[in-house]
Length: 307
Image (tube, rainbow, N blue to C red; front, side):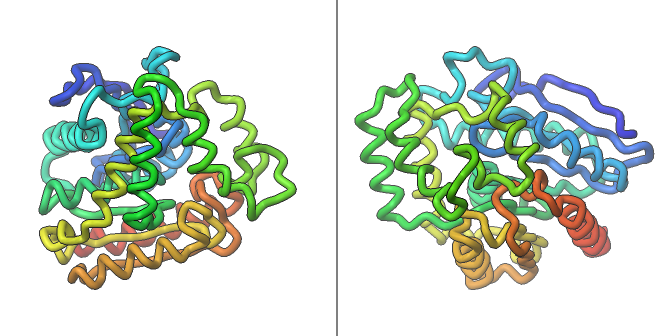
């Protein structure tokens, strides 16, 4: 069984980013850094991290600002007073630098899920040449007009208070393909037990504040400016994974749009794996063992390229 520890890492914006590190029994072949999604926390990746550690990888991930057990309840869903999206990406990069120093000489693979996938896509444009490989889970494509509309709504919301009206507009459509729905979060997974865990978790499913929604739409708008992809290492291995019934990815259409844009930007090593009938959270889906096995096979192939 993998060893696990918590460490505190200082970033340019916060002195106390809590990073969970899962260690394999032998010297790690690579370190996989996880960017978790919106309104959740890194603890939800424990099972996935242990499976990857069992295969010889060190795995690490931090709770984004405004997330996790060390965040006061009234600050859940709030990033920073200004430039929140940029600062969240900077926090992630600071954790990457810590991991590079702790695990020198081995590849660093960035795994971003959902909102974490948007952060990861921004990350590779802000920090050319990093990471060594990229896994994008549960991503989607958001047109410029949609992002601008979201920003307009966020400007009228209270910055430091939850914005339920924006939340409803942004996410109420996710459950429509799965009616009659048992919970508001059926779109996450076909596994009822996993959905119930999410619903019962006080650190999941909270509503973002007006300022955090502004930050989120700012980040998504930035991803529509594709010129940043010109600076990405064209040989970096990139793997997109998604359920073909994931509403965040527009039932796979948005995922394929983003992957095609990466290819058109000149990236040479782009893999796309879609899972039939799977929903948003592949690592908590009915076929999660298949997902991990496929990911392990891709990582094995990628390690041969990087070493």
